[in-house]
Image 1: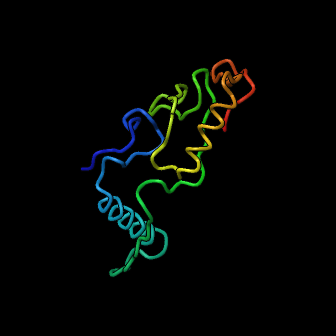
Image 2: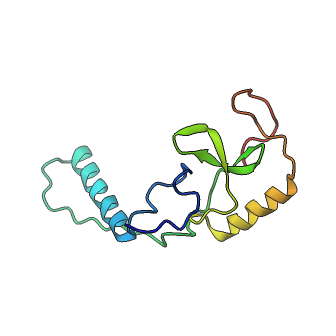
Length: 126
């Protein structure tokens, strides 16, 4: 097990494996890929040599969909899609996106945030 770097990890629905050691994550991806190859191509394949290439465990995402809400910008809460968690910074996001998030947050100090239940408001995603 690993210590999640994200302070929102237990609540945010954005990522699920920060508490799993990175090498274990890569091993799991490899097993899933081998399973998919056997299921979709040939179930009798015995030796499948699959290489899983992955970059850094953090600071790698180059696209994020932040949601406007009454308290700022954020992501949907895990298991409670109607709730939005205000995110100041996301550890899996490229740092340039985190800087942009701060700029967007400053620009829209009081956004007319979209209300999920009422289906009203101007801004929904950033």
